[in-house]
Image 1 (tube, rainbow, N blue to C red):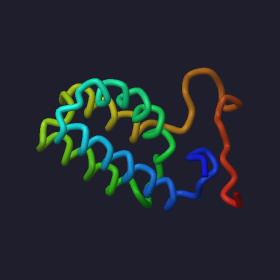
Image 2: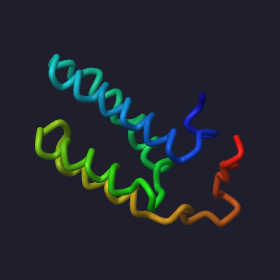
Image 3: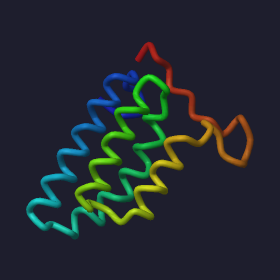
Length: 102
């Protein structure tokens, strides 16, 4: 199942899975994978912007901060992405609407 078509609770599970990957990479000192995974996380955090799960996503960011998993600048950038509006500067038509029925 794709993160794009998943319902919000499922997206949270996908993000937890991503957190597991990040934590294992940190533990195994696999820095190359952490660097590569950062780009995926930036895209994924946009898809978990929902008030019902934002506290849980923020908790993951706090854990990354406490464990020095990523630099604080990157974590803060992720926090900003989490709290931004659903559209960017182009136009409302740029929004990708993901149907909840799928």
